[in-house]
Image (cartoon, rainbow, N blue to C red; front, side, top):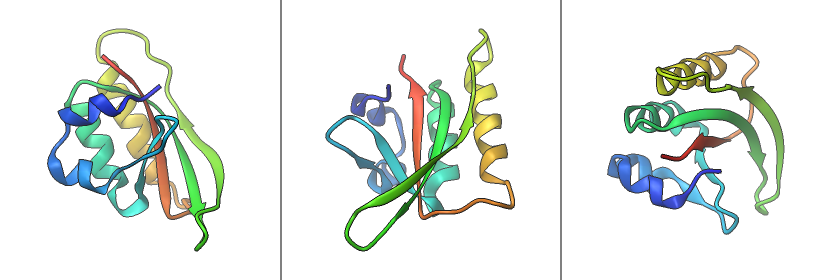
Length: 105
């Protein structure tokens, strides 16, 4: 489960674009997703999965699991990054937000 404490490892512009929910989930607007993925991986955090969300004007959302990555050992931060970037490059991408789940240090 992501922890808000991990955000201190990320560049300010990535943190500023993030929304941290009361339950600890962290999401970014779709336009900031690749930057968030790269910043998390650069910090050595392993991205485990992405969920795409479509928020409406009242804050309600529809969510779909979009990608997952199973850590296997050395190189997991890079493997998680590649899986997430590949998923964000799919032509059927939808929504306006991306929930990113990662493995904390």
